[in-house]
Image 1 (cartoon, rainbow over the protein chains, first blue to last red):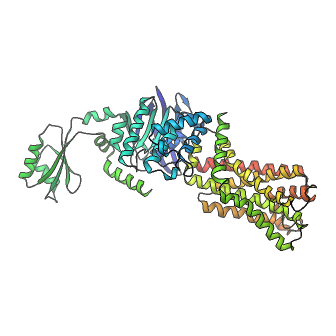
Image 2: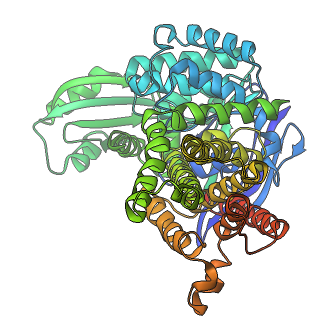
Image 3: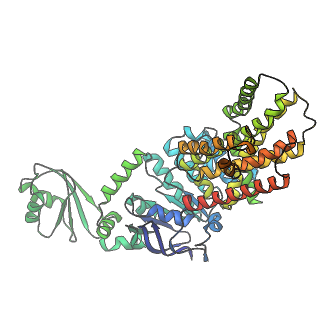
Length: 323
Length: 245
């Protein structure tokens, strides 16, 4: 059963087409990821689905009911966690959660109990009486998620949930999201961490320049490339004409330079790492390190969109740090 | 019931985080005293002048208190995205804005009564029609607050809100009949006076305090009410157009 159906959703800002007629569905109980580079239309899409932006065209259907022209009526069904915190810095953590509970009509005792439970669940119990402004980035993100689910919404929207926070907090947030999903909450997230999407999502959509170019189960997307053999080598001693040299000494392999020192060698046929290293060393290329990799969603993303995932990640992280 | 809970949550949060902050409490007390002191120095300090300056201080206290607070707090919340949190909740937009403005309306009413209570220690206020004064203060507070809302929904930055507020406030002070009777203003300025909500509020206060209103109460109240409705409607339109676009 679909909890969300989106048909031909389009958004113009003046002459600029931010989202171009996207269509997809989100099944009840799944984790759905929207992946794309900066400016692809991810946040605009979430804003249209949650009531912070009006679609220029298209339909938004929640649990079988068309709410396109009145998303307000569907807002009790959703929790929203934006990419930047939207809680009050001057209130304590507890006051923030209780306030958010009240916005959804929870009575005083009910919202207090729910808030206490969420502080416990999100590992923020000791910080509940601290002002939100005194929280670390990771704590802020966790509390913002807690505020998004205080009314037990059937679907939770998260915009870049782990951008700009430390590794431990990011892992904690991923675990929280997995737990919530196990308990039945449908999760719709945008992320530029493709490996995060691979770990968390059941299905993903790739969005580029406002258009969805692929929607499928993560397993289905990876299936055609899963048997690929990939070797990442750290080398030294060669600078110019490396790719040409590799093509001549390793016919039938796809070789790509990733950085000054890293190259990626790929083939559909199985090969032994030692054999490749030997050939390269005979050709005067020193191999410092070799790493076998499996094909990932990132490979699929790069193939389908033509966008280098690493570049996308760096750009986004830089933006998060500036923010 | 859910909407009522949400309404009071927004209202109480704003009272706590904005209006009960020490700087605003001191503003509410110091501001009327500063204006009163200024008038006393100007008129030579006769106690009989209290009656003539009371309504002016009440009106100006409301105007400055409400427009400043609301335009700045809403612009600030929009800028820091906390306002989005409220927009994302399933409360009708009109109710959200009514909850956001209720704190400022109350702040304006309390501000107006500070000089009234203080005046009670110096002069006899028994001849004043208190019920009419009350009604006028409530409506002036609502109109001024909605003007603050209109300002907040028309700008993007906090400094713009302050500048834009003054664009409305200062002409209003001088043209609403507080300092000079409208009948004595140059002919070309009079139409401006009548398109300002404060003019009608001040006229009611003139009638209730000094028994010298220029227009019938019913007309003044009706026009003030109309101003409130128009300003609120324009603000909602602005929000839909500029913030949920």
